[in-house]
Length: 399
Image 1: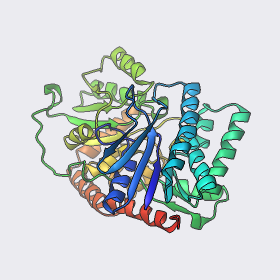
Image 2 (image 1 turned 90 degrees about the vertical axis):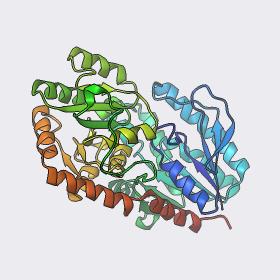
Image 3 (image 1 turned 135 degrees about the vertical axis):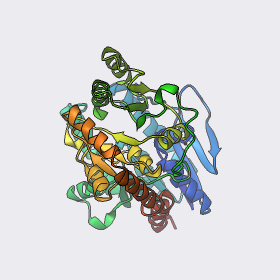
Image 4 (image 1 turned 180 degrees about the vertical axis):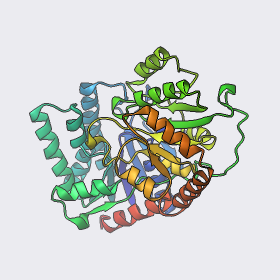
């Protein structure tokens, strides 16, 4: 089967960031399918296409960067949608897999459905336009109306819908989509990337971090992620002379503010460290020597109640417990499976005490690590999840 996979923000492990599309496409190639990724150009490179682990990757000349403002992002989304529609049509696939965000990814899929009579499966990674509306990013009544019409079209024209969290599935069904048209297939664990052994070489660690309790955050750095909270936690750690240290990986508009704020509190490069954007292999290396990982959210509940952050599953892949400061489905899941804790989002003194108490409970830590490894190798194994997606695509292959 010839599959066109539409993903504007496609990443390989070397690039860092979320690699769900890479892992899925790689597994489909192994199964004998011809997989074509259509994605946006990265940086200044102008390579039209390449092959990565058997996956044919086509780059559209529509650059996108996390530093873009609202207008520039919208222009990038629309340009990509138009150009990728023509590219996908020329490839003449047997099936299309379109993953959001952005929501405009549905446009080339709908175009091919109409022009080429090709069915598409639509993957919902973020609930648009609900999230930008809740954040106040989308304020114009006319733009909100357009976005809502686009959302309905994406669902209506699709042959099937896949969500990456169970509460996202519920939300889509509540919008009038039949239950049998919506399947939840969560993010999953990259066991081929994250080492799950228990003893690791720490000789490469900076001397100031040796013998410290390292807590890793790896992901987007924006106001929505509320990383100011971690800087405040770092100050609390300093005030209580704790051996907990926070190591942050990622990029985004909020990074310079956080560095300045940490400098102002005299905790930068002492109790909190910012290492920028790195490959997934580098994140794996740091997680291997970490004690805990952390995922944070701030703002309206639409941001986190349905959230399925990559860092959450990366932590499970690495066999590390995770601390969350939001009450979404991921936090409930981590507590039910005994792989994580909820820390107070409004009181860093309480949050530090919760972290310290848990880290000092060696029995709990050992059990949490074992539970993470079990989940990563079984129900959250991304290879198995890729096969579930493929079964759905097979059902809608053009005959």
